[in-house]
Image (cartoon, rainbow, N blue to C red):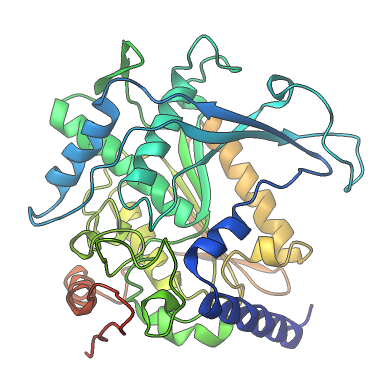
Length: 405
């Protein structure tokens, strides 16, 4: 695919996605994109429900982190502790790409756990974060009725793309704060009738990680618009957007995911996190022209400066989530290979050193300096975030004021 063809394809995708988002209520989009479709081809899918614990420790450890990492003025809804839907997925060898799912039990086809957290806006922060924590704890400490044996944390890698990566970084911040709060690297909590340790996973592996997805304040968000598949600012905050039972929320909020006062909190925006000491190694794959690239670089640099190993993998001109949008592109295949290799390295316990690469369209690779200082200071980033946060008003069908710098 030539650079011109890539540009045309990106524009086509962005135009389609923008038109769809502008004219479709949030609830309808959720039902369409979240429908459980039959898995075909070389993929196992086993659908399970992870039982909610009777104890409130998992919730309380999150609430403690919200308070301890915040400034004291944050508002948020305390979620119910509910069962968590999830899918075990794995590779199914020796079948054609359109082969239907086999007629076997769910227990016979589990391998990799993909958690289906509750969706916002109807389940605002920290509901999704709580679901992720329960899924992780269930992986480590399964009930007797679970199809899997206990998986040690040293074999667990949090992998995700886009906003899912942001949730994984939030879980790490929760674990880190629990360590500080309890004064030990092995914080504990009650989970399904037993006292268990909440450990760090072996590593984090992300593709197109969104670390500023709620505020979108960094320069690349505007500068890279024409190069990315991501549409303009979410249309659900503008007058004329079609409403339904899901959005606007009741009571009204200015953001799908959380209350406005939470937008620059470390558990919502990784760019606001100050302390990454003790975090496991991180792999980050990013397109050089993604709208989120500046924020992702900012987090990677600050994490690396604090001694956390970072594997930075940047790809020329690639848009958001390009391996999914262009699965046959050579840079997509390279990204999938590097992503999987990083997961393997983390789970194998290899000694990871910070390293950065930039892959050009012609697949030539050059090295990058990950810890090179970002062009924006922490103070400047904070000012941008706070300015955008202060401009947001609850959405009731009227446009939200813009921040002018």
